[in-house]
Length: 548
Figure: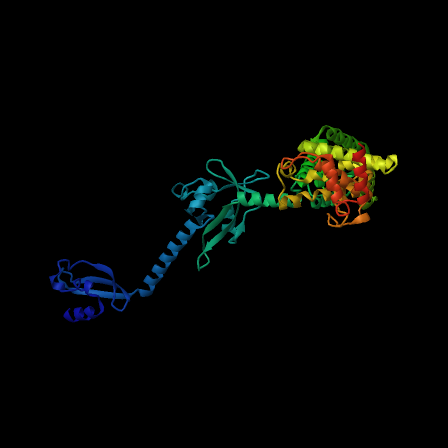
């Protein structure tokens, strides 16, 4: 016994040695003992001891057996760590995780799974997966196949079909996506299934938004050209005949953009889109085809019905306005009646008819728009209204003295009235400013000649006037704007407008200066004769004012 104890002391840490000395003094000599001992060298022994007793119950001593279990303990520790790591991972991931046993009963759920199903782990543990994980097909509303059962049978990873809805305990429905995988031991036995799933709501909304944007025009909310072209291919078959295509072009959009800015142009387009929706049937396909063009696809619709739709749209447009702007859309259409007819020819015919109608309708619309622009400008600035009228009168008087014919006199009278029409595109604060304009404000104000040109040149009857308006701030010495023309490079009408406008400006009160008398104004004009103004016209104005 002593020899054995001495040997054990060399192996066993001191904290265990009192268990072995001395045996003849131990009170529990007849007990069988079992324990694990960690040696100084790091090994772990499994110790078993039992007393040696004869048939008469006499105690002879103890028998010890020792078994090295170091590797087994290491494996157990590693497995415990892995289990703890796995549980920590499952509980912390952003997806819902449910694990089951090989009968499909729930073993583990993480917090996300609890939130999505509405079940707590304590409630769900041991229950069949289909009782907690309740899924239906969103389209058919039929209950989905038990995915865990499917995995257990196939021993393979399985995924849910599209359009799967998870119903939580309280009845809340959520679109989900998921996958389930078997848990397989080294010996090949399937001991359970791990199910990973996530709430698909936000992702689906983003997908729907992307899909919507890819097939819809962002401004009007109508379908875009990409969608229209796909639908045209789909509908170009005998089952959809007669197939009618209507094309429409919003009249005056460029003029509105140039005059009132693109924001107003956008309002016009949105209003036009709204009218098209109201005028068409629920299943008609309406798309924005280009900047100011729209197209309507009418499957199984003949020309008679198409004309009724166009009339309905025009009647609605006649009652609607975008701000002060009347809505006007020029239409063209054609109908494919037979399968052998070429769809591209149909499109060309539709477009040609639309443009023919636009030639007349847009001219009328642009003329109305010019009147609207002038009225809007005069509403923004009463000073501009009075100035334009006086300039028009002076231009007419000068042209009469210069022996213009009646048609040319009328033209310069209109040019004088419209010479500042481009100011519609200038900030109202600048137009009505009571003191002198600063450098940046002058730079902005100088744009009005070009804006006026763009507005007037869009209407055939005002195309010549447009050039006079563009040049009325050019100077005789070439130091004017916007083109830096000089002398007789500047149109005669523009030179007349320049003097008339300057004379009226000088003889009208401004907040930052008093008006000059006619005599003082003429003196200033004569001083600038040959530099700013045409000398002959300056002299003529002097004579005209003196006579008056």
